[in-house]
Amino acid sequence: MTRAIVSAARNLARSPGRSLSLLALMCAAFLAIVLIRAGYADMFERVKASVAREDGDLSFSRSDGGESDLAEYESLRARLASDGRFRATRASVPIDGLVGLGDRSAPASGQAVEDSGLAFEPAGRTAEARIGVTLARTLAASPGDELTALIGDTGYNLKLVGSVSTKAATLDRFYIELPLEALSEEGSTLRVDRIRIWFRDPSAPRLEAIRELSAWPELAGYEPSAYELGNTVANSIVGVYEGSFRVVLVAVALATLLALGNATLLSSWERGPEWGTMLALGAPFSRVASALVLEAFILSAAACAAGAVLSLAICAIANLAGGLTFPPPPTQTEPVVVRFKLEATALALVLGLSLACAAASALVAAIGIKRRSVTELLFERN
Amino acid sequence: MSDAILRFEGVTRSYSMGESVAYGLRSLTVEFGEGEFAAVVGPSGSGKSTLQHLGAGYDRPSSGKVLLMGRDLAGYTDRELARLRNRSIGFVFQSFNLLPVLSAVENVAYPALLYPRRGEGRSAIEARAIELLDRVGLSGKGRKRPHQLSGGERQRVAVARALMNRPALVFADEPTANLDHATGSAVLDILEALNAEEGATLILATHDPEVTKRARRIIALKDGRLAKDAP
Image (cartoon, rainbow over all chains, first blue to last red):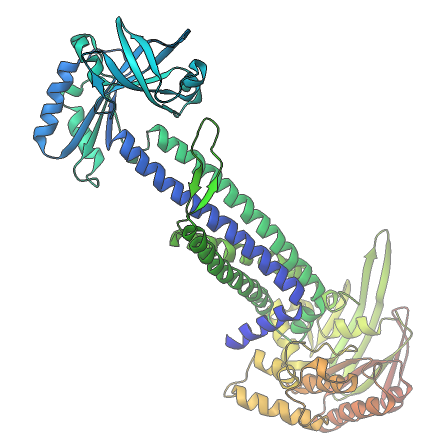
C-alpha cells in the first residue's frame, strides 16, 4: 500500500502544474463551502438566540378573533408564576389607531407589549413608543420627538424612543409599539393575542410543556409554538438560508466534480500508453482502477488538508478582527457582522464530499480505460 | 517444426474508419513452434504489430482464432488473460514503455510482483531483477528512473522486464529501431541468448536486416496477408 501511495504521489508530481491547479481548485471549493457554512452557523446561532430572547421559549398566539382579556391573562400569569418552572411571561395586545407629528398623521397598527422596557406616565397619558422605520420617515419623526396618537378611543402623548425594522418590510409603514401598561385602563376590552413564556431552565423540553399548557383553560384557543418545533417565522427564515446553502453546496460540489472528472479523464487519456503497459504486463484492471482512485484520493486529501488549515486560519483571523462586516440589508439600519463558527461536521461533510467526487471521477476515467483494448491504450498518443 | 505454441487460424483484424474499413490482418493462418526465433517483416502497415498484439492477447481478432498453447484466446476471461500475459508472454515495445515513476529495478520486478509465486518474497524478486539488469549490462543503474537512462539503456531495461517471469513466448516490436547499431546488436544478443538458453519462442517484428539475418524463420506480411514464410 505504501508503495502504491508513493507511486501515486510520484505520478501526481509528474504534472505539477495540473496537480497544483486541481489542488487549488478543490481547496477553493473546500474553503467556499466551509466558510459559507461557518458564516451561516454564526448567523443561525444568533437568530436562534434572538428568537429565544424576543419570542420566548414558548409562544401562544391566537388569530381567531376570540376573546381573552387582561383579567384572564393575569390569572394565567399568576398560575405560571406559582408553577416554579417559568421565569417570565409577556403578553401582547393588538392595537390600531392614528399617530401624528405636527401637521402629518398616518394610520398605525401594532402591539402593546407587557414589560417592553417602554415607560408610561398615567398622569399625562404619556407613553414611550417605537414605530416602524418607514412610518418614522412618513412622519419625518426621529427619536426624542413627541407625537400624538389616538389608539382605540383614547388619546396619548407619545415620546418616540426609536424606530424598528420588523420581519416584514410592509409592516414598517404602520408599525407601532407601546407599553401594555398604557392600555391597562381599557381593562376587559383588551384582547390578548400573544403570550410569550420563558423557562427558568433554557434547556427544558418544549414539547412536553406545550402539551401540558395547551390543556390549561386559560390558554384554550391559543396556538402554541416554539423555535425547536420549527414553526416560527425566524425558523422559516433560517430554513431559507439553509436551503440556499445547500444549493451552494451542490453547485460547488458539481463544479468540483466536473473539473476533477475532466482533469482525471484527460489525464487518463494522456496516460493511455502507461495504463496499456500495466495491462500488457498482466496487471488486472482492478489495479489500474485503484491506481486512478488512489491518485484522485491523494489529491483530494491534500486539497482538504490545505483547505482545513486555510479555513481555520481565515476563521481565526476574521474572528480576531471582530468578524466580517456587511452593509445593512434592505429595511435594516444595522450592518451585519458575521463571525465564523467552524463546525467539525461541516469539515467532515466536505471531506466526505471531496473524496466522493474523487472516487466518482476516477471511476469515470476507469470505465473509459476498461472500454479500450490494451492495443488502443498503448497507441493512444502514437 | 516443433509443437505450435501460437497459432493463427484465418485471423482477420479490421478497423472501421468512418465509412471505410482498414485491415490489420486478412485471413492469416500461421503457427509458431516452441523455441522458434522468427522475424516478421514487411512494410509499415503490413500487419506486423497487429500480429504481435493479437498473439499477446492485447487485442481481439474481428474473425478467426488465435490459439495460445492450444487454447483459443477468445475463451479466456479478462482476469485469466491478464494472468496468462503475465506468466507466459514477454513483450519488448519499440518505444520501451517503461513505467516512468518506477526505477529500473522496480520496472523489471513489476511483472513478478503482480502475481508473486509461492514462497517468492519481494526481496527475492528484486534480487532477480538486479541479476537481469546485470545480464543486460546495466549493473549499478537499478535505482535510476527511465528519464535518467539513455534510449539503449531503457530498451535493455525493457528486455530485462520481458524476461522477468521466464515467459515461454517473447514478442519484440522493432526492438532495435530506436537504438544505434552497437546497442541494437547487444539487445539482439540478449534475446538470442534467451532463445538459445531458455528455449523461449521469439517473434520479432522488424525492418532491421541484422535481425532478419539472425532469425531462423522469416515471415513476410503484405497488406495483412502472408506474403512469404521461409526459414
